[in-house]
Image (cartoon, rainbow, N blue to C red):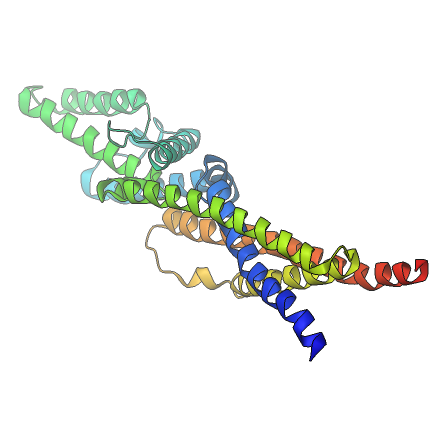
Amino acid sequence: MTKIRLYFPKIILTFLLIFLLIGTELSILIQHKALTYQTFETIVSQQALDEKSYSALETYFNSRANSTGIPADVYLNAVTQEDMKQAILSSVSEAVEHMHSHIGDGFVISMDFTELEKSVTEFFNQYADQNGYEKDEVFNQKVQANIQEAETKILYTADTFKFQTIYEHGWFDTIRKFLDIFRTVMTVLCICTAVILILLILCCKGNFSELLYWLGLSELISGLLISVPCLYLLKSNYFSAFVVKDIQIYAAVTGYLNYITNRISIAFMITGITGIIFLILFPVIQKSSNKNK
């Protein structure tokens, strides 16, 4: 009965520490990993979103050529894969700014359409000259409408993470508030974790080996509770079951979910491994301390 009374406070503190460690690590990962430019840039590279986006444009303009009679090269020669990559990164940069600070100028994906406008205009002018069409106001309106339609499609394709839709629904404000709350939660969790650690140290009464045992136990359990489900999601390729029509959007969404899940699993695997090391060191240090006594 006496032993139970001695261990009861340590068991309670260890139990609390398990969930505090989980909350603290997750809040830190969300703050510093989930919604950063570097994260999205990595996904763009890993998933080759520029290549997939350009391929989607090729498919669109080639199929459109059958109905409009405008060769796909009129558009594709004026827009390169590198242009698509820069447009995707522009959408990411704009979105991150909106998520982390208030911007009132709308959501704008930066892309230079000078060559596109020149290419389309030259095609229509050449077509009009060859077929004797008058270049009147109606003609100019058709040219501008065609350019506008092409630019809209290109920008839509470049918005692989659908940030434009998020902006139009006003969700950036919600995300910003969510991040502010998480910043506060992270601070509170860090303080609570520090307090529990101090209490656990006091309960162990300077017994370093015993402290290693309880810390190791809490880190091992917290690591397993999160890393195991994450590894299951990754190994089962769970996110691939999502259905998205556009290949570049599918790659962006599933790539993001897999990347974040992978980062979380790695972080908690490190936590679990640290716990195992502490548990291995516990009997070694305890034995050494007993010999010295």
